[in-house]
Length: 376
Image (cartoon, rainbow, N blue to C red; front, side):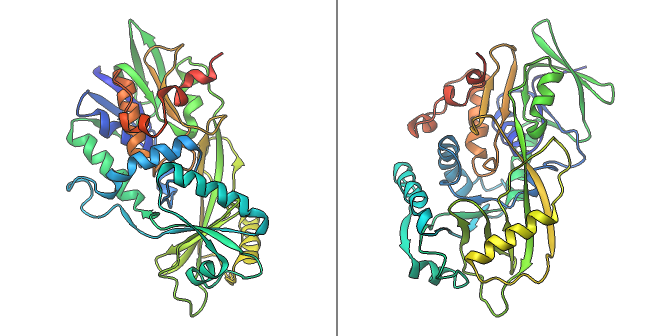
């Protein structure tokens, strides 16, 4: 039986970033039930780095991740993780308060931004309709993220530091025995760990129940994406990512085409998600109210699961009622851009160290993301 300090269940972006932060200081095994890392969510993400995206705790985690993502170690990926894109949040007259509130949040976080008028919006993306868009919030520092490069970089860091990372390693039983966790795999193999880190995404509550730990009430929400041709004759290379102020849709250039999402949030059970034609059709209709982008056909479509805690904030920390059981779940759609700081926070809490000072300076505390907020 293998004996390690930590077992991390799940090798998506959450588990991988935590493994990279923990492996230099502790022995650990990362157990992934699928045959590929990040199969359900991370591997289906077309993420942007936009610190203004998401609730306040994710904004802090994203800002704290920026330096690493901008300049990772030379041996991390061999190429840039972030590439320039910029984000333009567009608004109708009735949506103006939304982008004004976003501008105020940007000012608090020190994120470069500008409230821009209709003319500037149409110059940045000529496909936008003047009878719909009246203003926007421009975030010039937003970037495209190489999600695969980032994810694999974390896994390489963890392996180099000695982590045992396994695929096709489904956990079938978790039991607390003599101050340690006994972890049983579908193969029949067992491991012993001082602590278990639950980074199993949409299956987070399922993993908890397997360990006899009360669930948090996590909700997997399905998010759809699809690829279409760019408008004929349009030079889309310099277009920013466009996000509707109410998050009714978004689109951005992707390898000479447009990647579009309805920003849907369909409650789901943990499963291998698939796209629905009606959701795509409704998105095309909403997008065409704001932009003149003819859609002749859908070139490719897919869906993934974004999992949220009841308050839509991340959950990182030990369960007060289950010794040695640490939650690392609820990343929603913000887990990639906030991953480096989330991994560091998880490692610090797992080891009983002080919460990262840069996160405290940004106004985020360990208590705000602790699972204790759900235990009455």
